[in-house]
Image 1 (cartoon, protein in one colour):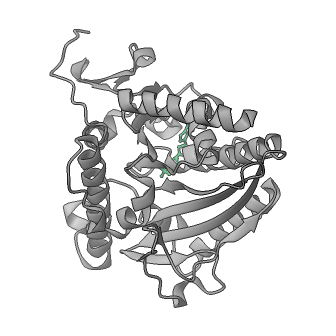
Image 2 (tube, protein in one colour):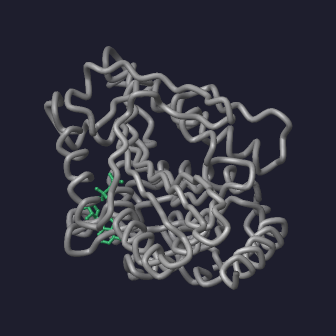
Amino acid sequence: LKYNEELTKRKKLYNQVQEAKGNIRVFCRCRPLSKQEMSAGYKDVVDFEGARDGDLAILAGGSLKKIFKFDRVYTPNDDQVDVFADASPLVVSVLDGFNVCIFAYGQTGTGKTFTMEGPAHNRGVNYRTVEQLFEIARERSEMVSYDICVSVLEVYNEQLRDLLAASPSSKKLEIKQGSEGSHHVPGIVEAKVESLSEVWNVLQAGSSARAVGSNNVNEHSSRSHCMLCITVKARNLLSGECTRSKLWLVDLAGSERLAKTDAQGDRLKEAQNINKSLSALGDVISALASKSSHIPYRNSKLTHLLQDSLGGDSKTLMFVQISPSENDLGETLSSLNFATRVRGVELGPVRKQV
Ligand code: ADP
């Protein structure tokens, strides 16, 4: 009973906070300058002086070019623990029955995979999320019984691949809408998991399947969206009430524009498909942020898949990943502008002199 009261109170509080702030958060994370960039003599163009207040300043030729505002700004010194501390309230809300979508956006090489997956010795959001899901589920085990299932999908050239299927490429997958209105992919493998190590095995299986059939794994992963879906079914042992919620953890394809010289054949098709899905994602989120009456989910497989977890009372967190190097300035500005549009709040022109 106490748990039910607690949950009702918390939902009320969530709703008040959401009403005040909206359901979309954008966190900006900048990776360190790499050794190669340092030895090539590239300068750092990011100023973190206002980072605590969510301000990020971009410099060009030594003077201020533009200030961006985000819900959080991480400097290259902030680690995986700092980043997860801000993302973890969303994990709690998944267990309370909300749908959540966390994704990383940015140019290839800016740390999307580092933030979401992370190296084995310094794991990122995906692992920490699942770890926390199990931890809270255990704490609540006398009151709620949770079933947790994991699916791993890839979207490449507007086609879905089930990375947990025995032969991922041979299966034709479509997105369907169920009678209760939720979206699902019939036939997709949903692995029931009961421990962190089981999840880890599932993720490893997904990663190896991703590599199959591509000559260059890194190139392939930078051109496809890798999507982890965690479904949580909760049964309240006291009231018998059941809820079902979905958490998407998405490592998006690289947002970089294709060089004109590369614009032909398969590369052109890939680039057009990436462009299409990333702009569809931007359109959907900014339509949500501006409370538009039509939300164009159907314009790409990515947004169609995420439909239940973008909008309504679901919560969205976007990491915009950037490089600090002057060499990447054009792409950095384009990512920051995209993220600003997504956040739905434009800052005026430069308001601070450096
Ligand atoms: P992406 O997924 O965007 O292509 P990666 O995650 O592969 O980028 O990161 C590119 C390189 O930068 C990797 O070597 C990664 O270890 C390093 N890197 C990214 N972010 C950080 C960070 N915050 N701290 C240290 N190294 C980072």
